[in-house]
Image (cartoon, rainbow, N blue to C red; front, side):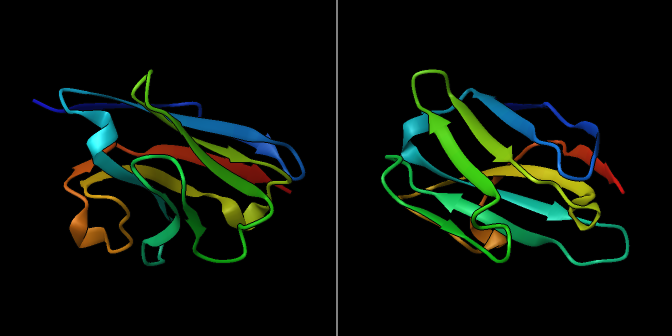
Length: 123
């Protein structure tokens, strides 16, 4: 059984940094592409970034590029999202996701999800 534990969220002020993590167990981590999504109240879920299973390709969905960095440690079965210069509009529930394959974008391709972790940025 696959288990996913998210950690690292919280309340920060605008301009500060935060790192969220997801640790997976019960799967062959390096067989899976990973991604981060977020959903703010009243808004649709959006993909922040994707990373290939071999950690050799990353992609960012929008304006977060340059502020957010996705990474993974296949030895620790852990996915990271480093968020710098946070803005109030980054306030959302953040979700990690894993899907079998080299690199994935569509939410429907990810079959293991974290429980979500709240990130709140005050102005």
